[in-house]
Image 1 (cartoon, rainbow, N blue to C red):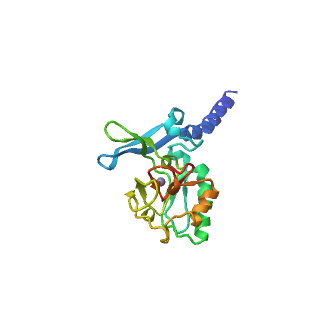
Image 2: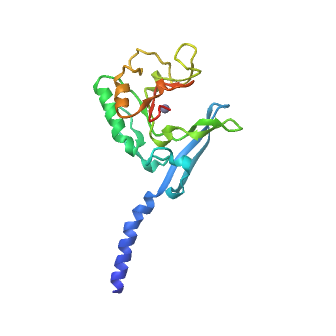
Image 3: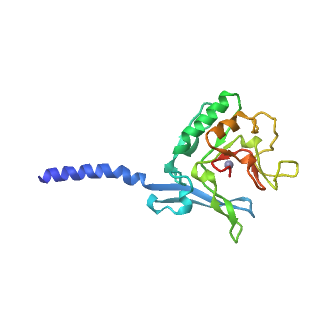
Length: 210
Ligand SMILES: [Zn+2]
């Protein structure tokens, strides 16, 4: 009887142990400093998943800032990148479809935690996580599809703030007529090149385009 109890206890511990491990959240983050124009407050976070805050959980269920919610996507001729597990098949289908239709893709960035959005703190740092922080945004060919400010409509007055010059018509630059645009749209991802407002992020796709 006593032996049986010990056995049951052992089984219980073995079953529970992986669950305990999976319930931890780890990530590295930083804040964008608009004065120094660089990442500051670089820090590693490790905490029980049950203690995640609203901002760490994000808007898409199952896609928090945690490494544990992400999966590495490997595609031929591309460096591996991470996205949220529930976005893996969407992103894979879209990129494979674009490549099959001849759209050249040289680099993709997905999951990357950092506060690059939202209002500035009194000392000039951004205060909100980007959509990349949750693995639900991807950047494609950033060297040819820059992020611009002061850009209600794209033109010479727009100010490039990240990535390379956007030259519509050049191979690898994203336009509404590009197969990558259509493939992403088919998967429910909006393009940062056609969002309302002052910024145009030509490399960027996410559920909101932001
Ligand atoms: Zn982006």
